[in-house]
Length: 289
Length: 246
Image 1: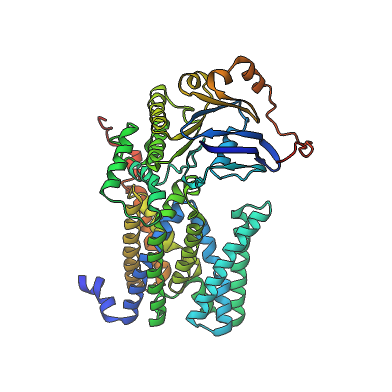
Image 2: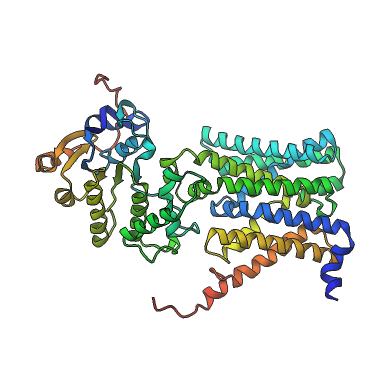
């Protein structure tokens, strides 16, 4: 019975195995980046960036059909251009960075949807918006795994200046010039992971695997290393659980994975050891010292 | 031997001078208090010294010292207290110049970090999240980081503002120790009595230098009154300055 429910779908079906590996790879690469996004109060910027990569992927689709590298490459270029463009407009005019980025990504999203609707079918549009984690082929899998691996390596390399830049940017500026490159590398990691998640989860949900595990970890840990561990574990569990539920209940897989993360988020908000609502409502007795 | 030399230095923002035509030098190993009313240009001067602000005119010479090797305690630290990091790791940041982004932190470094934490009286706080520290504890933490930086020149911008007397006294001990180690220390301070009691030299600044030298001669009633008469606001209709540049 246990086998039939929890193991059989993956043992019997190759597409399920692929989807699981893809989800686990995403669970390794995206959540650490998401933790930093959340700590720097850039969670919604992550969302905006996810939508911004759509026209790039759409143009890749326009030029080369459902070619992985065309869409991924287009997405990367679009992501970097929009991050850069929004930043430049914000520096050159009175407009603040968040409004500038909002303007860009809304136009980008509409442009992307238009392009896909003109060239492709509704199925293609659904794939772009919501991904098809069950349709990952070997090439897509290699891309996802490659991006996650690269992301982890780059994160390890920029770890120290990134943390310093988050905690005390003034101090980092006073002792080093590493702050700006670390920040740019971090934005590049965001775009990279979004492009990786785009194939499996689509442009509307790719950021979910970044932000939701990070928010879950906020209620479970007090130290950044522990937070990243919890975030990765949560994302992996949600990937597995989401695929399982979508298989047995015949639901679309991408959104189900994100819903699983949402359920785990609700549990952590209520019962999380660090600031969960339950502990706030019924606090334990204070300590001696 | 001059550690810092200011040549007709003007520092400011959008062409308005906040420090106007400052000339002089700070000897190596000097302990100088920079005093002046709000808006006198003390923070601006310090930002110029550590290289965060480019002069509008004139120059700052540092005797070959890289401004990044100057330890700087700003008036308001931009620290994100909600970041999940503990006291130990923030103090360890002081090792950046020695270790960079990838240098390992070995046994001796750990001893140095613990010694710095002990020197500021924060033993026992190592694993505490920085968000749980009081104002005074935070200031001690920043001093511990400064200690680790092991810099020849140390610049402190209002280090004792909003700090309890015991913490201020303890941190002042550290400043005296630095002076004993022949490090050059500059501190911007508002407490005239504290300056008179602890700092042999003073620079009274009111945008333009009012007096500079031994504290007793600088902080006279006349000089202090002169400094207070300075206008704080920038003059929107000021003409370009006609004092000859060197």
